[in-house]
Image 1 (tube, one colour):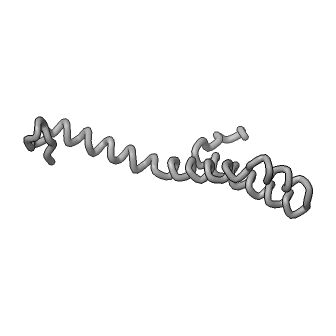
Image 2: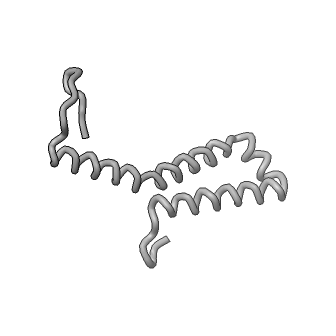
Image 3: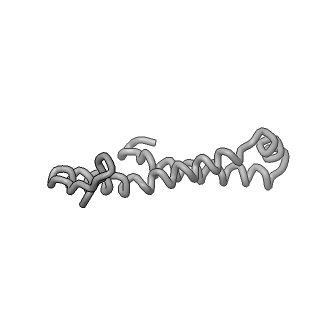
Length: 87
């Protein structure tokens, strides 16, 4: 593996290569959490004041609101899973 230093390619040391691999593995491990956070942000953005007003006025709206809340709850469990006995 190589890196650029002042425009010149330099071969990484064994320690630097190990660090690169460790960081890549950590980034890959965090990908599902990042995706869950993005999905939560999208769902929460859909909960605008207008949509909330409309949701509480109809049975269909209440179902939509509950479904959206359930989806957010499930996604949060992926990010911060509860230990046994919590939640």
